[in-house]
Image (cartoon, rainbow over all chains, first blue to last red; front, side, top):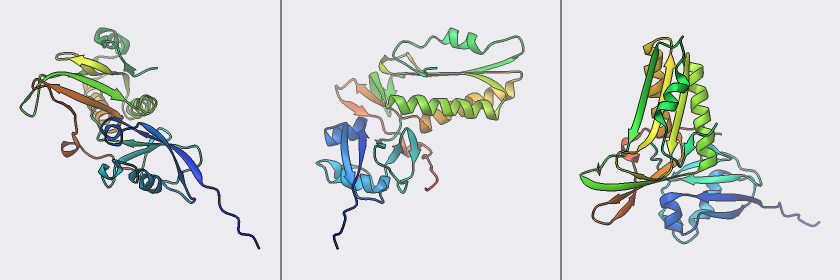
Length: 88
Length: 146
């Protein structure tokens, strides 16, 4: 019997402001094994140079809406890691 | 409708947009760039945003406001380089009576500051530049678990 590997989920991750400065980039693609969550995507981002400087529980968004870190993600989602907001 | 602009905010036109004969109360808030932050002299600011989400979040906040109070709303946030004295945020509400106009305007401003993905860099008189982090003073965004 041949085992079939479950295909990974690829999502686009966006970084902004101070977080983009710390990691030296503002967007990347991340591949995670299903079932995946925003938190699992963040774990992959933390492996990048500068990624360890992200706070333990940053604000995150999925497809333009705030979400919790246990929010499930699907292939093609846009995940944004948001520094402390400072509008107004 | 676009809630973000790189141009100076036209406050009189926003005021006009919420005024009508049946609205006897109009409330407004202008967030103005000030010349200091935590005892440091500020020369200017630079605002940036996650634009698609910021527009979507502003639209959600306006819809919430108009569903909670009988008001007409105008809202703008400026992006890019701003000087001292420039308006960064303008919120205007018009209603039949003042209570709804005041409450709705306060809600708009607080929710924009709490939820809309906008960031600012301050340029100080000593030549340093820093991203502003108001986390310690702000009410955190709370999101229901999936």
